[in-house]
Length: 374
Image 1: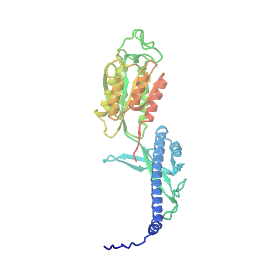
Image 2: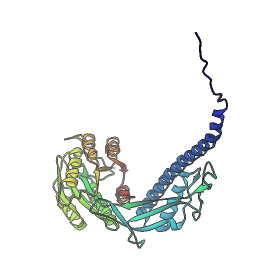
Image 3: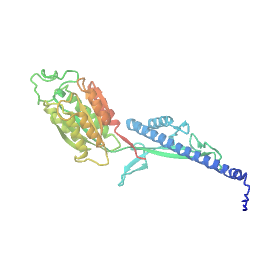
Image 4: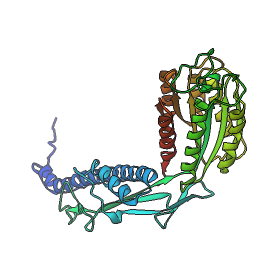
């Protein structure tokens, strides 16, 4: 029996040749992938920085109507956000003032315009040869013949249309001054000797202080470059909407006058007031589907009848409304109303004096929501 030997070809070293060919290609591809990942990271960082600058500049402009201050604040917030390891530096030319309007598709269209009538600020975040910080260096330079890249991202902050429901306390304690205990008897100290509930509100009453604060709020809103519609709901034992959403602010003040002329006793149904205000924003005459919904709840006391304020706030917040709360006088339940504001994504204010109450309403009016519309 004979056997045949299979002759094999010696191929020692072939893999080395393959490695010599593929290794440079692999290195180039790896470097390209690393650069691409870093570029995307830097672009994301630039978006975050531009958004922060636009939001900060927009908020400052809402408060001050001062373009110089708005730019300065925007620059500060841009510097707080790093792009490729350094804070973003903006120049004055990176801020463009103009107007944004909601289109039929729901998008906002921005048009540059005069600063005085502007409702939007566009921020151009740039890392290019013409930008203060220059282009961004690549982590793996000279791959494909370049060692840096340029990128730009813009962000627009817009003071959007807002529908506001003022939810106001007209319980019996509002007949008393902020500086006195609301305990009956006796009558409020500033009331005439023969005064009774359902007579005109006493001169130093919390109610009259509230009416003044509401007037200041409406005056501030009237000076805004955006469109705010305001409704008024009031509550004691129960709640009622006294005026649907409107831009006729004089008519809002007029609807409070009957309570001033005849101020009656009643409980404190804060939760009912919140629900009533929310209904005015969602279902009342003049409600706008595209507007931001804001509820401002004012009380001087402690909830003692009807739906829990926190339960009402949870329901309203689920529908997308923002809630601000104001407590007036030391008897008010501050902790509960702080919780209501927290649930509603807003802010709580406490006022001890009429001046504090005015300041709270004014601050809210100046900080009604702004949106990033790009």
